[in-house]
Length: 218
Image 1 (cartoon, rainbow, N blue to C red):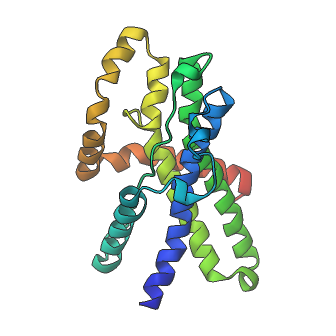
Image 2 (spheres, helix red, strand yellow; image 1 turned 60 degrees about the vertical axis):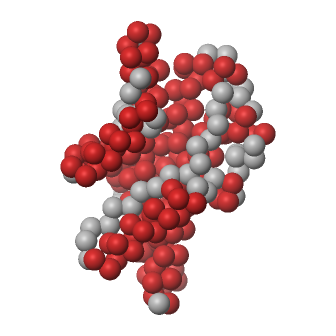
Image 3 (cartoon, rainbow, N blue to C red; image 1 turned 180 degrees about the vertical axis):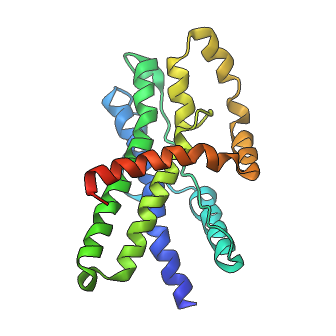
């Protein structure tokens, strides 16, 4: 039982950080462009409690982790936090500013993946000082952040990639595209069950890993 608890901590810390900082990045960027909605609701914070969704941040990732742990199957973890409220009408340039607000989440995950990679490299160079547990946490931190980045960059509304694509489309195309948003979660689930989701995410994760390798030499 203790080993399971330790494992949950080793994987849970990077996962919760990845999800909550992703949302905080949205709020911070929105404030930079003039929308203080997230700030007034206390969502621009590193306190994960402010961002945790009981189902998406805790129950779903924990259930997926335990299923993989006891079944011996592949570990495909994902989750979500409470969405950060953003009011584009408060922006000077709603379409262009919303593009950057949407991009801030995946970019924060790429930066976090880079940070965990640096920790992993230090753990390799100083194994006696940092220990295997930190290496396990760091490796998972890299993988999970790249996973979250790739998932959110898919051009499916309401994912960040969908909102980025929306900002580039001509007005009529954008209006038609926006009508797909109510079905976005269903589309993601169908893609996940069919195995296509991983095929779409893999090139983005590989590209992110390549960038990390450029900066860290790993």
